[in-house]
Image (cartoon, rainbow, N blue to C red; front, side, top):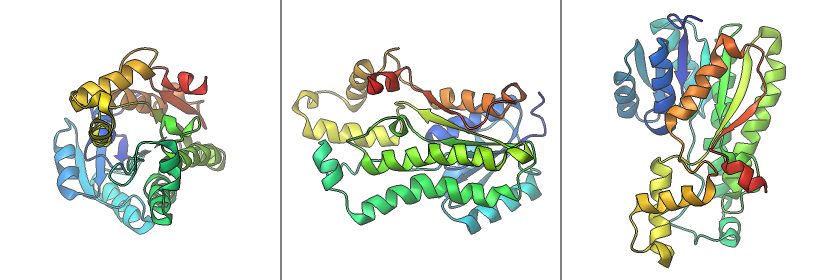
Length: 271
């Protein structure tokens, strides 16, 4: 297929996984809109793309904010073809909780719970709601969830619940939007060296004696070695490559699917 006139919006793409997804679509020649809660990060990410692009300050959890963003995209780049619901936050408040399943749940407040659902579920809902009347028939919506959506997550109860809901929402939207030939799929990333894992390994180093003399990156590599059957970490581009496939003509009969890109990590969890 030709990507030359395809318009893609990636939410929460100022850095991390979202920036990697945006890069993969740019390499195909698509026009890319990057949204973020930081205008500076959105502009920087968009400027790094070797394609026609725009950075937009937008709140993915607000229908009004996203509607305005999509209208801006339409005026600058053209009608939206592909929406990537990537915006979200990490799941563990490492400053307030000890790293144990009991405290991960019992330490949650109503505000903690609501925050996770707001930034990890409402973002997908609000962005999609705003996009439905603006996205082209035959387009594609791709939700970014997590392997935490696929099995019990004692350490991340609110985060896992929110991401599991994203997977369920994906299937519902796939049915609802099928008459317009809009395909909706979901990607569950595994373990990726992002800001969230930098914070997590900082907490592990501080609280777990076996990690006291290791760098945060070394701790991360131990986690990968113990968790991933393929023995390798995932990258933002790994997620972006699948997103590109899902949005392509080659995936024209694929909708409502939830696929892990995790080096087999979720297989171990399931066992």
